[in-house]
Length: 311
Figure 1 (cartoon, helix red, strand yellow):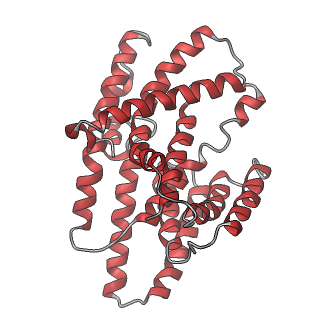
Figure 2 (cartoon, one colour):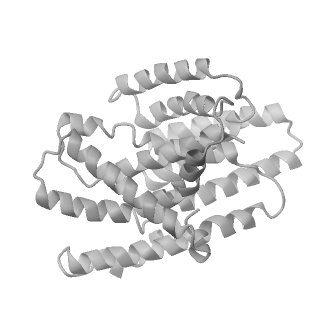
Figure 3 (cartoon, helix red, strand yellow):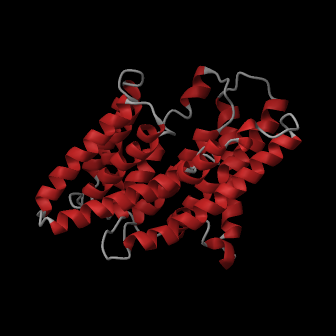
């Protein structure tokens, strides 16, 4: 059991909350507070790849039953919530996209019902593709090392595409696939008895990540940082802890529900506090959204009928 990854999933969920704060006008320090938030998206994908076990004829069906119901339920929730917000607080009429067929196709297949639901549907697409690739490798009788080499080149090529072309497919699906493959490959090479070396590497690569902001592409910096971070958190120095288990159990729920509270919180904050927003305001809103989200999720997961849509 990777107890450290339970903690890391909770940290990643907290970081992703910071991606969706509505405080657009900030002081320079207020901007730097959330500088690592986007990194957590790739980290989540890599963790999914690390924990992924491909096998069995029913794999795709199992993933569909696991991912698609929450995806469809939360898409519906966000469609309704956005409509209510438009009618009650944002002009009193529905956005034009509600009358567009192309918008509804994007909602169904691309996760555009909300700013973050692309991750769920792209995770399903990526895991389905990876399963198909592994099945093809087995049929072609390609050995383990050959598979790893091919997947390594594929992951790097996908990362390059995500950096080079700024379309929906490259920015979301291709990027997620690159990180998913990275995590999937790492599980055969990480050493659980290592602690100091991964920690040192994490500090060094983190410094490079921050120091080369604006010089190197963000996805590339995230890709490089994911490796030592996962190596550090899979260490057997981490022991089972109730807090770690709780953070892991609520991480997906926090990811799914937090934009609802983020939009509401930003609506309130922007009416009582004038920009630019400093560190205290940004951190305060971030923590408040996370605390409310995790509290609500903790309550919902206790309801058996609803729990399956939060995990």
